[in-house]
Length: 380
Figure (cartoon, rainbow, N blue to C red):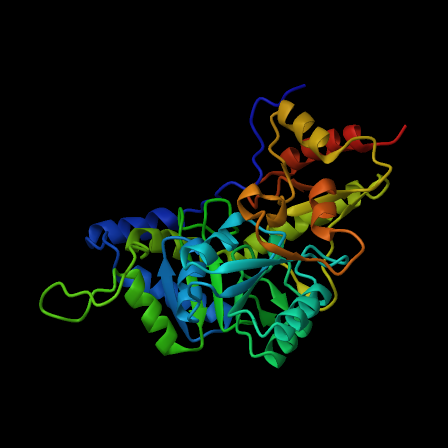
């Protein structure tokens, strides 16, 4: 029977604090892209990520774009990118006229495969055309294999942009996601673990770099008594009202992570006897469990597409795993490096399903999802 109330994948989850902070912003008349909540939000995200400087922006994609620009990426440069991700991780490479090379996923996780990265770097070095940067993603809130990725990049002097859009509050080896690269990027889109109704942020320990990003994000307006522009700029700043919402959400980050972990564990226990498995954390990591991802085994009675379609008919929002970037027509011209016998990214897309995981989901709603998934995936 179709549910009367839709169960969403990862909807915004508000507390009572958002209204208080937004009211404060309005009553103080700080509703423009400046104000005390904006500054405080930057400081609080820095504290969360263990970084010293931050710049709040209109989106995570804007953050990736300005991070690339800050590292000097330009026309004709190569940028290595995680293959299994959302297009917003790769599109900014082309804003600067550069070229992306896509790196396959690891067989043991959804994240970038260090073995494929090693092959790509070795090949690039042999051709005397090393990438200007690597964009590596912490997918679904699971930290990438930074213990292997960072030394590889350091050996070739390739700076790293950590796309932690989905990983606020996640840790690897006791270190916060967003702090592993030269620049970290977060997203506060409406479906993320916290939202500012849209928005993003870049963080770094390089204060001069963040200052330059802030300059570009504010239309590259020079400090003059009139409008003076010596560089191309962008309208990428976050507003004080959006920052107020983000601050209110951030105050309950630990509670949100705990609830999403509880949801993940409930799915794992409920599906233990089915031909499926949940995407598990790798050793020495603490993901934020932004989305609970279920992977169908080869003997599952239905495909991922069929399961998603059936859940949709029941008014339950589930999604296929990310469609790899090398399979996207717009990126078909990009290089793609795979170290395994077959594409792990394609395998993940073929078998992965993102289940409803919102921190505001009730036990009753999750039980409805579990019941329907069990009916779809049980073998006869």
